[in-house]
Length: 146
Image (cartoon, rainbow, N blue to C red):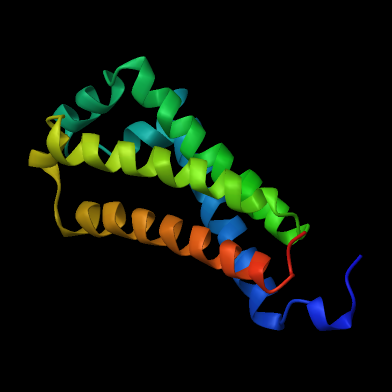
């Protein structure tokens, strides 16, 4: 049971809602890619070689992508429910994000198609995942998550 001194501040709720929206966009990206939707294909109109590389990623990569986004959104949901398990789920998401990032940078042919936007997204995703792990750890220390 928490008392009034352990109530999260307004920033906690703002971060939580933004984090859910961010991770929902990740879930959408995963679903679009996994089901090779028209929306996914439309993103690669000017880069058909990149679409082919993306569609031919190994199944373990697709699984890592799923783990990253679903652990991330569940972690954010549990954060808003003020449960400590949020930090654990966000750590799993971060590990999956880092595996994806390293794979994209060093072990696939997609890097040759990357421009400023793609690199900035790759970095942003990792930075936000790290931030959420650190933030939920601090929230647990403050007694906001139990």
